[in-house]
Image 1 (cartoon, rainbow, N blue to C red):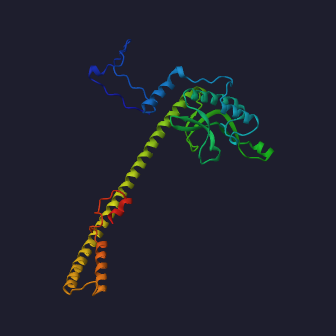
Image 2 (cartoon, helix red, strand yellow):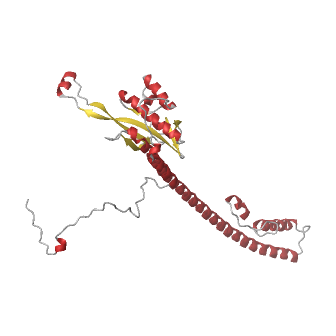
Image 3 (cartoon, rainbow, N blue to C red):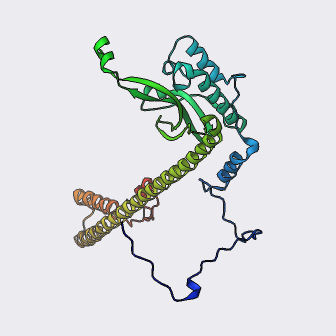
Length: 327
């Protein structure tokens, strides 16, 4: 492929390239801030601790002083039980990898408890049955589980092997590569730390703890958003209650006004009836039926009138349970 020739530059300053080297460079006046995967100050301090070489987690070559959960899991495996048949570690590894898996998880559990975060079997509601009674780590108000699996590769059978055995199903071979999943209370893994090509999982256990801290901050935010939604929902319901209470007050006030107007009209008629009975010199002795009606009408007007002298005055009620005071 042909290339266009470079242009001839007439300016001497642009014809020469000068490279300089400072054997004693000056320190940067404003060094960059270290990056942290979390933002909360208390979690940043814990991340700094995990990055400190003094607190590096080491996995011994042999299993000694096993954590109770690790010891129980080892007993189950020695008895031929699968991990999912008991309340122990979730291990999906080859039989030859079990000693490594137990040493790794024992080192992690011991390190977590040294930091004040207990590891134990706790029953929890989960979508998968085998996750309902599993190992949980209680850390800063949250709980998380663990799942250790060994990656596998698929090997297709050869034609000669298929012809000899009659089985053409692929074989799954363990690769020795570990993946440690951190699960939420419902059993779903969303943070995974695995073996790297040059860095085994044993050297990344401090990163596992940092991943736990990332989940803690994530769950804190989730709970904060839930609390905000609940607070907003409670405020909405309270507003609806107050609006309904105001409508009830207005409705009862209008009904009270109608009763008062009706009572005033009836009282005017009753006063006129009393005046007419007086003009006709009606007495209880001469007209007992009229006298009884006038007494009943007086009582009826007093019952109907919300401002009757024998009734308490209306008040402004603050609670739905006090609405009877408006009647």
